[in-house]
Image 1 (cartoon, helix red, strand yellow):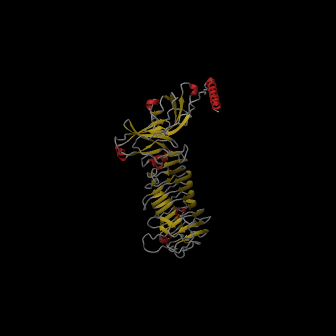
Image 2 (tube, rainbow, N blue to C red; image 1 turned 60 degrees about the horizontal axis):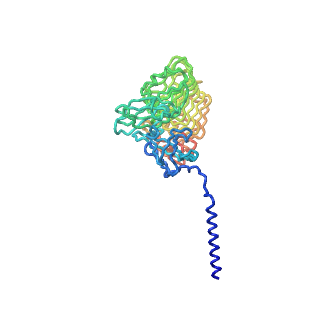
Image 3 (cartoon, rainbow, N blue to C red; image 1 turned 90 degrees about the vertical axis):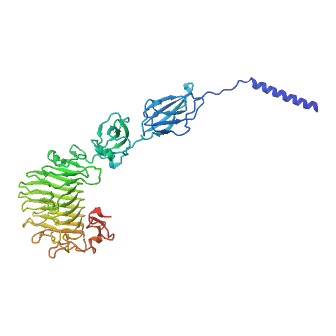
Amino acid sequence: MRKRTCLAILLTALLAAMAVSFISCQEEETFPRTRLFMPVLNEDLRAEQNTIIVNMAKMKEAVSYKLEISRDTFKTIDYTVTVDTNYVVINKELVGEELLWFTMYWVRATAYANEPEFNSKTSDLGSVRTQKFPSNMGAPTQFDILDNQARVFWTPSGAAITHVRVYAITDVRLTTPLLTFGVTPEEQTAGETYINGLSPSTSYNIAVFSNETLRGWEIYNTKPPLVAGDNVINLSGIESATILADTLPDIPGGSIILLEGGRSYSTGGYSFDKSLTIMSGYSFVQALPHIDCTSNFNIMGNVRVDSIVFKNLSFSGAFDSRYVFNPNISDPFDVGKIHFEGCRISNLRGVARFRGPAPGMIQKFSMNNCVVDSIRDYAVVCTDTDNGVAVGDISLSNSTFSRCRYFLISRMQSNSVVIDNCTLSELPAKGAIAFRWRGPESNADITNGLTIRNTIWGHGWDEASAGGYDFRAHNGGISLAATTINVVNVYTTSQFLFTAGNELPGIPVGNYAGKGSDLWVNPYGGMDFHFKDIAFPGKSDCGDPRWRP
C-alpha cells in the first residue's frame, strides 16, 4: 500500500516536470502596436476673457498634441499649434495674436506618438464662445437702428467717449474704419449720439473710443429700405426744418421723399408741378413726421400732375387760417389724384380748399386710414369757385373725422362720393351743413350718387356749448336734389338730429339708443372711439376699423 502511494507521487511529479519543461520551451507571445486613443477632455472647453482653456486627459504614450482652432466648424482653420502638454491655454502667446472677443471657436486635437503611424485620429473637442469685451457701450435693439441711421449709446463712466467709428462686419479686428464721427460734450454727458450715412440691409461693427482707446463695439444690422429705387430721396437725419421746402422744386417727377418721424418740416408754399409721394421713413420715435401748414401747398397752373400722395404724416397749423392745400390761381390745371394714407390732420381752417377763376380738375381725392379733427369752415374738401376747380370722385375710407364745422363743400358737380368704414363724431357744427353742394343748376349734384356704408355717425358739433346738435344735410333747394343716396349698415346715436326739412334720405336717426359717450370710450376729450358698449351690434363691421375689437 505504501509502495503504491509513493509510486503515484513520483508519477505526478514527473508529469508536472514535463509540463513545465514543455511550457518553458515555447516562445513568449507578443501583440502588435496600435494607434493612440483619440484625445478626450477632463472638463468642457471654457473661456476666460478672450482666451480658451483646453484640459485633456493625459496620455502616457503621447509625446505631443496638435490643436486646430476654427471659427466656421473647420471649413477654414484659423490656427494650428503643437504642444507637449495636455493642459493648454489658447492665447496670443500660443497663436501669435489675440483671439477675437465674443466669438465662437471650434477646437479639435490629435495625439502624437513617437512614430507618426501610431498617432491618434482627430478628436472634435467641441466649441466655446470667448467672453464679451468689457465695455460701457449698450447693445442696440431694433428701435436703435434704421435703414441708414443708428443710435449709439453708452454709460458715461471713466474717460469720455470722443469718437464713434463704423467698420465693415468682416473687419473683425477693427482696423479700417468706414466712417468716423466726433462726439460733442453734450452727447458725452447724455451717453448717446446718432450717426447716419449707413447703407440699408447691411451689417456693421460700430465702436466707441476714448481718443484712440477702444472702449467697446457692437454689431448693428440696418433695416431694409422702406422703398427702393433711384427715385427715393431720404431726408431722414437732416435737421433743417426747411429741407423739404428746399428739396421739392429741384427733384424729378415720380420721386418718393422720406421724412423722419418726430421732425417738423415747412412747405415753403410749394406749388406741385409734378407727381410726388411724401411719406414717413423709419424713425427712432413713434411720432409721425410733421408738416407745418403755416404755408400751405399749392398747385401750379397749366400743368398735368398724375398723383400727389401723402403717407403716414401729420399736418397741423392755425385753426383760423391754415390749410394743407389752398391754391388760388388763374390758370387751369389737371391732377389725377390727391391721396392721404395713414395721416393725422388737425387744427386747420380747411384740409383741401380749391378756388380761383380758372377751371381745374382733380380726378380723385381720397383718404384712407386717417384721423382728422378740429377743422373750421372750409371742410375736408372744398371747391370754392363757381365754374372753377372740380373734384371728380371723393373717397373717404377706414378713417375718423371729428369736430369739423363743415364736412364736404363743392360749387361744382362731382362724379361720386363714397364714405366707407368711417367714424364721424361732432360733425358738422350745429346749424351747419354736412354735404354742401352749392353750385348753380348742373353743378349742385353728385352724378353717380352719394354712398355711405359701414359708418357710425355720432351727432353734430355743439362748438359753442349752446345746447343742441341739429344740422343740415345739404344746402337746400337744388342741392343734391338729383343725387342718389345709398345708405348701407349705418348707425347714428340718440343725439343725432337733422334740421327739420333738411334731412338726408336713408340715414337712420337714432338707431343706436345710447349717446356717443355710451358708445365710445372717450370721444370728446380724448379722441378715443374704441367701443365702450360691447353689446353694440355694429362693433365688428361698422366705423373706422382701428377702433374695432
